[in-house]
Length: 198
Ligand SMILES: Nc1nc2c(c(=O)[nH]1)N(C=O)[C@@H](CNc1ccc(C(=O)N[C@@H](CCC(=O)O)C(=O)O)cc1)CN2
Ligand SMILES: Nc1ncnc2c1ncn2[C@@H]1O[C@H](COP(=O)(O)OP(=O)(O)OP(=O)(O)O)[C@@H](O)[C@H]1O
Image (cartoon, rainbow, N blue to C red; front, side, top):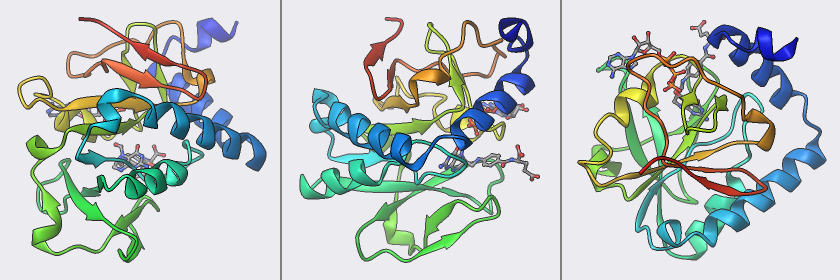
């Protein structure tokens, strides 16, 4: 029954958002520690100098323990900013313990920034990508804004590694793909690291 309903993008989004919003504080905490541990032991993340992460909203995986570890390893952390000039594009701004945050139109925290805090996407080594659901091929469904699909369009050419962060239950049988969808080569969940494609 559930597999029939979860054939449509809208239904997958609704169901997975409800599921992640329903997690207890303890479940969220455990997942955040486990994923941070796995991520920091993954060589390509450990070696990254510049890494884009996201701040959690809507029940997403809590990335704060991971960000703290990156800071302790002297890695530079960047956060996505919705570009108000170029609709649909993301900017990535340097995030430090001194950054001041504000809430954007979706109630997601973004840092106040100066022009010099913005990094060119091609200078990022790793982009940690939020997602609502994924499948066994690495196909990804996001919040429906198209922001990450646009930003990850040329990730191979730019030599950036996109890494999805998700709960184990966000894996579905099949994401009905659209031509613009960018699949992920690596997805981390609290239980495991999964590699897809070539
Ligand atoms: N933590 C985090 N930051 C992120 C993203 C994300 O998925 N997670 N994004 C990933 O792209 C971008 C924000 N994208 C978003 C797209 C849609 C909605 C959203 O809530 N849409 C509403 C309808 C909005 C409206 O009424 O205008 C909805 O679907 O209910 C939120 C964020 C950039 N920052
Ligand atoms: N490369 C692109 N260029 C222009 N528009 C795009 C591109 N990729 C996606 N879009 C547009 O973005 C809209 C939302 O796409 P989609 O539903 O796949 O977003 P999403 O992957 O769930 O969201 P996000 O990437 O922000 O998490 C679509 O209507 C699509 O037309």
